[in-house]
Length: 141
Image 1 (cartoon, rainbow, N blue to C red):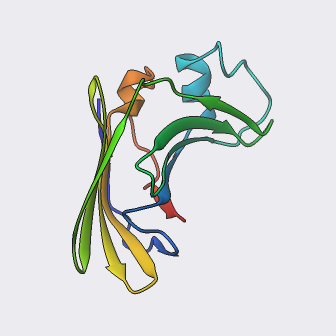
Image 2: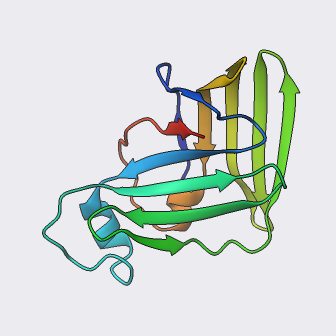
């Protein structure tokens, strides 16, 4: 399963193909069903964040963040490779693991700010999170 989204209002200062964060908010009930080992039943209704973070040293990490407890769970993918292609005003980013492409994203850059145009991830399927409709991902610095 993959998630493909576009977020026309997601402009963020400081985000670039060299460093940034893309975050999907996942319904807590879906996370409890998919990963009861990480997210035991709770009274909170706050969604869980799935984050993909990369930096200028071509390092990336994937994590699940529970805002109700402030716990961060790393998503083990093994070694990952970050590739960025810049053709102003657009930039394309791919993060690959031995299992395939983890994240494919296109950003529109404008000086010091960037806007997420397109993002696709296979992480939801790999984490056994059921299909459905999720909010558009957001871009962070």
